[in-house]
Image 1 (cartoon, rainbow, N blue to C red):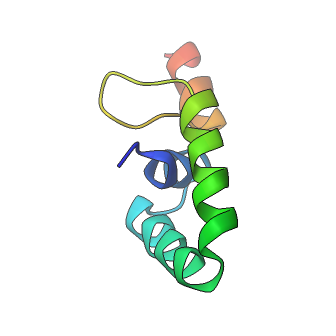
Image 2 (image 1 turned 180 degrees about the vertical axis):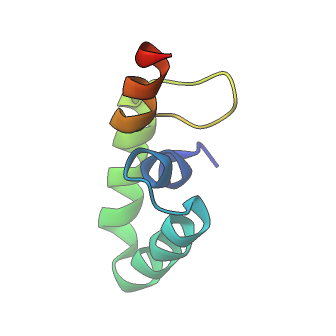
Image 3 (image 1 turned 120 degrees about the vertical axis):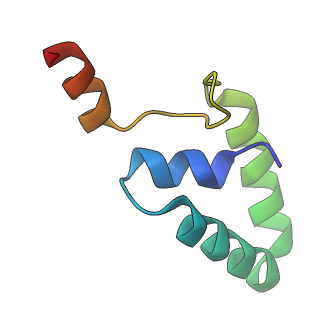
Length: 66
């Protein structure tokens, strides 16, 4: 909804779909802590123009080297 798991997937260089599936599993295993942490992360993670919330360190480095 806020792109937290997709942004984490991009940041850690993991397929965002996998991170979203992991998030769904966490919601079923521990719904209250997961939703609370999701809300906190959604409020503190910076937004990007393309919809994801974070950039991986490697993509930032490659942008500066180009």
